[in-house]
Length: 85
Image (spheres, rainbow, N blue to C red):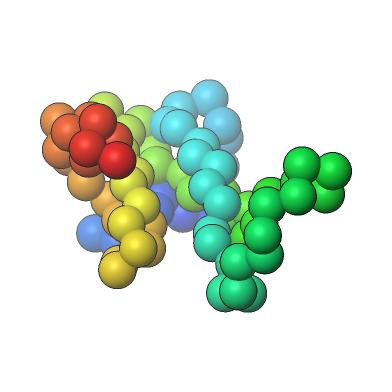
């Protein structure tokens, strides 16, 4: 359950959803990859939710990389990271 802003340096509690931004990300599964079968395709991994409060979401976003997992990054870097993927 989401309790506070995903920014580790922010302690804003999640009380109302009217301010800020919710992110849904799929955490990759640790299971070995199976050969793709079009008849049995399903998402691999588990869904995780993150929330950035209003002030944090105005300046930052979330990005995922395989080495560090989900990270908080400045918006301009997040867009560059997404374009490079």
